[in-house]
Image (cartoon, rainbow, N blue to C red; front, top):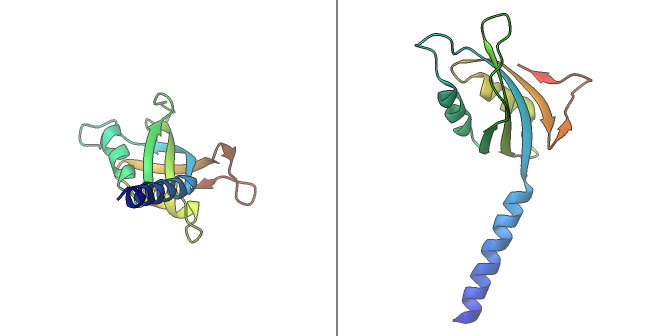
Length: 123
């Protein structure tokens, strides 16, 4: 019986470790509209992001900032299970499609600035 328990424990450990290696932290800047009572709240927006396939965690990294346009900026770190067949632009578009999100900008990938053609991904 003991060898089976040991095998199961080792297998679970390997699977969890393998999945952890696939998770990347993506720095994201969002422009959001939350000024009217009928607008989604920040909690609603973060919950929507958590509902995107392969998003593991969402963390806000600072306070909301208000530009002159009346909309607000929020900075996030999104823990994302990256796959070779998915681009960060797809993640940015999925976030942009959440109610209340007006613009998505990918700032970093695993702590390093992320540029495509010398520019950040903006949708």
